[in-house]
Length: 638
Image (cartoon, rainbow, N blue to C red; front, top):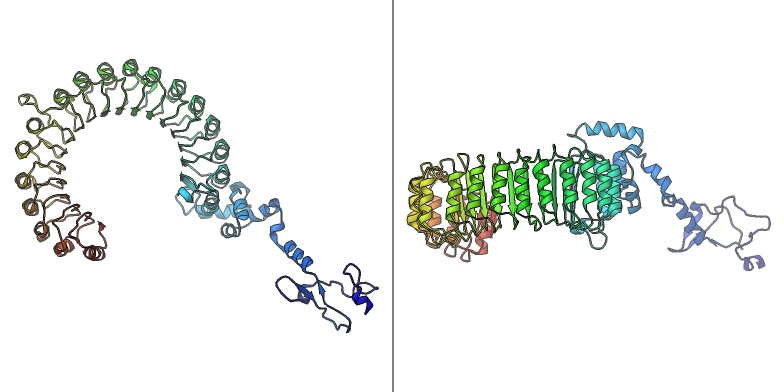
C-alpha cells in the first residue's frame, strides 16, 4: 500500500517495469468527463491497483492524429492529387484548405486529373467562358479563392468583375494571387473602387493569366505604372484598356502598353492626373493601324495629343474628347488637318472650351466619312461653325447638339439643309439660343432623308419653327418634342399635315398646351402606323384622347399617359377594343383612376408586360395585390 500512496506518476508502478506493452490504447479508456480520461487495463487487477489519468497525453495524441498538423507543403501535395470533385469538396473544410487549393496551378494537377479535365472541358464552348461578379461586402479574398476552386472544373473563369470591397476583409493582392494561380483562362478583369489591390496582385495576374484581353481599372489608387509594365509584357492579347481615376498611373505605363500590345483596339482614359501628352502620343502612334476606339476625358493633355491623333489615328472609327481644358483651337485645327482620321465614323466633343468655329470646320474637312457627330456644352461654337462643319461632312447621318447656347435657329436649320442626303436623325437639347422666328425657309429644298427629329427642353422653340420643320422634313417617322411649352395644337397640326409617311413613335411629354383635339387628329391620320405614344404631363389630355387612340391605333404597343386628366372611363375604352395589343401602359400620377378600372386592367393584362401604377392614390393596395396575382407575367410598378 505504501507504493500506492507514494506513487508520483513519473516512475513505474511495478519495479519490474510496465505491465502492458501499450498502456494507452484507446479502447482501454473510460471517460469520467469532458476533460478526464481514465485508464482501466483489460486484464484482472489486484485489489490495490488504481486507475491512471492521462488527460494531457491523450489530448496530445488527438492533435498528432489530425491531418492539420501536416505542413502546408505536404497538404498541398495531397490536395493536388485529388480529382476535381474532391478538390471542390475539400475546399469546404477550412480556410486553410481553401487557400491551398486556390493556389494550385493547372499544370500542378496530377496527370490523371488533367486528362479527365480535358475530357470534361469538351462539353463547354471553350475554356474561360464563366463570368463572376462580386460587389460590396461580398468582395473578399475568401470568395475569390472559392471562385477559383469552384470554376476550375467547370470550364474555367473567363470574366471577373469586382465592384467595391468589404471594408473589414476586402479584396487584396492575396485574392488576385489565387485567381492568377487557378484561372489561367481569364480574359476580362474589371476592378472598381478597390483600394487594397496594388501592383503586387496585378503582377501575379500578369504572370498567370496570359490570355487577358480586357482590363478595366476605376478608382484603384494603389495601382501604378509598375503593374501596367507587367501586364503589357505578359498579356500580348490585350485589346481593350479602360483606366479611370487611378492617380498613380502615368505616361510610362501607357508607353509600355503601346510597345507591347500590338492588338490594342480600344482605350478609355479618364481623370488620371499623371497622364499627359507623352503617354497619349506614344500609345496612339504605337498602335496606329489597329486602334479603333479612343475616349479621353478630364486629362492634362494639350494640342500635341490631338495633333498626334489627327496624324496617326489611321484606324480610329470612334473618338470622344471630353473636358480637356488645356486643348485649344490649334489642337482641333491640327487634328482635322492631319488627314489621318479618314476612317472616323463617330465623333463626340463635350465640355471643350477650346473648340471654335475654325477648329470645328477643320475637323469636318478632315473626317470625310463621319456619320455621327455629338457636340455638347461647347459655348464657343456658333452658327457659322456649325453650318461650315455641316457643309464639310457629306456622309453625316446623325447630328446631336446639347447645351450649345450660341446656336440659334439659323444654325440649326442651316445644318439641317447642308448635311447632305444621308442625314437621318437630328437632336437639339437645351439650347437656349433657339428662338421661335418665322424665317421664310419654305421655298428651300426639302430634307427627305430625315427620319428622326428630337427637340427637347428648348424653351424658345414654338409653332413657327415646328411649321417650317414639317415642310422641310416630310418623311419623319419618329418625333420627340419634350418640355416644349410653346407648342400648341396649331403648330403640331401643321407638322401632321406635312408628314407624308405615317408617324411610328411620338413623344410629346411636357407639352402642356396640347389638347384632345390634336391627339384625336393624330390618331385618325397616323393611327395605322403609330406604335409608341408618350403624353406624360400633358394635363389637358382626357378620356377623349384614349377613345380616339382605342378606335384608330391598332399597332400601338406602348402608351404613357402619366399625370394626365384621364379617368376610369378612358381605361375602359382602351380595354373594349380587342384589336388593341398594348404591351406597356404607364398611368403614374393619374389621380382620377380608381379601383373601378380593375376589370379593364385585368383584361388588358393578357398582352401587357409592363404596367406603371405609381402615385395613383385612388387605387387601393388590395387592388394592386389582386393585379399582381392575376397578371403574373406583367411587371407592375406601384
